[in-house]
Each structure stands twice: as C-alpha cells, then as structure tokens.
Image (cartoon, rainbow, N blue to C red; front, side, top):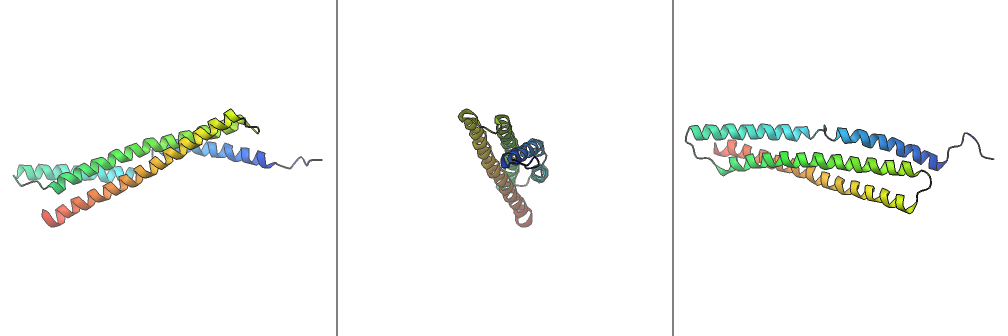
Amino acid sequence: MKNKNYISKKEIKMEELKERSKKSLESMFYSLQRIDLLIISISGAGIYIVLETLKYLTDNEICINNLIRWSGGLFLLAIILNFLSQMSGFKTNEQDYLMCQSEISAGKKVNKEQQKLINKYDNNSDTYSKITNILNYSSAFVMFVALTFIMSYFLFIF
C-alpha cells in the first residue's frame, strides 16, 4: 500500500516545472531591465562627448581625426547590439516559458506530438540564448573599443 504522504518523482518534477515556468515569465520582463543599461548609459554618454567634440573642432576649424569618428560609430554600434540582445533575451525567456507550459499541459504522459512541440520550444530557447550571449559580449566589447579610441584621442592627439 502506498503512503499518502509520499510524493512521486514525477510530481516533484511537475512542481519544479511550474516554478521554472513562473521564473521564466518573470525573466521575460527582467531581461528588458537588466544591467545592460550600463552599456547604454556609457555609450550614450560617449556619443554625446563625440558630438560635443566634433562641434568644438568644427567651430575652431581644427582637423577632425578619424579616431573620434570611429569611436562615435562604435558607441552607436554598441547601443544597437545591446538593443538586439534585449530582444533576443526576451525571445529566449518566452520560448522557455512556452516549453514549460507545454510540459505542464502535457501532464505525466507526454505523447510524440507534445514532445515534438516541447523540443521545438527548448531548441528555440537555446538558439536565442546563444544569440543573446553573443550580442551581449559583442556590445560590451565594442563599447570598450570605443572607450579606448576616445580616450586615446584625448590623451594622445587632442
């Protein structure tokens, strides 16, 4: 006879899936507000400095070095990459949420069609996650290169 207080492994897994589903939903919204704002802030400030420098150089008829132009373009690229990473981060969490919902809906017995859908959402989530990571690292790298360019200009050329 089975103990009434006994919880099966499948029931534990289902509870874990429900909890993971909730966390994935929360993460969809958090991904839009995460610390990547720092990259946006620094890059935005960098663009402002570049534009002010270009204005100063133009007003005083001083030759504009390509390093200043490149840094402005790279700051802009960092913002664009970061924006794209936010979008793919959202899609990652959305697909993970849908996968969890599909598993919950399927219940204890998953048929082939349901498993196919679960696998599709899981693969999509993994793909978007890889894209998000690449875009995040690229955005940070491009911002650091832009910072290096702008600081090199001010330290050695200006």
